[in-house]
Image 1: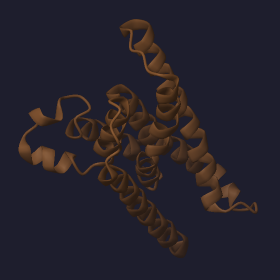
Image 2 (image 1 turned 120 degrees about the vertical axis):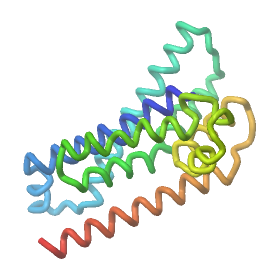
Image 3 (image 1 turned 90 degrees about the horizontal axis):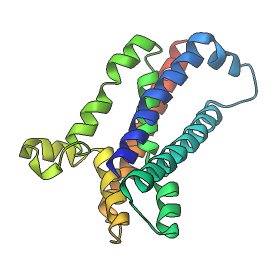
Image 4 (image 1 turned 180 degrees about the vertical axis):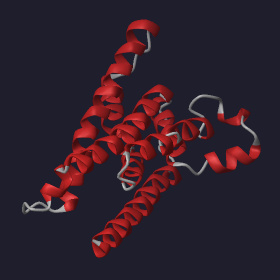
Length: 190
């Protein structure tokens, strides 16, 4: 599960951010403003593409786990994981969109190191309980932690803890609102 979440984290943050910056630098994003296409439609299309890529990541890692480690899940669980994990990556994609607001590839790559920080403090690379208490407090409130816990609950056959799902939704709303405010501010200054 950790590798599936990490793959979605990398793709959703770094690849989304770099794609958006490349669209900005190449002038593609600016030329879209000449068309009857709204900014939100552009973001939805980018999000859809990356959702599909995240689906492929989950499938590829699942097949790898099955072929090399003999990990077997029911078809129903596979369908749930393939649909839910990429969908839960929405706040991660929004982090990528937020990083892209810098409009600079170098800045995105530097700030993109947040991916590794999120992976560490959320317990993707180390057992969460072994992290120092103060890191557990911080890490336990990250979208990556919530996504990983939901995925672990699904795999172990438990009911999803609503607090984790609410956490993902709150992060999505906060990041979406922040992006909206930044876009409006940029539009006013141009």
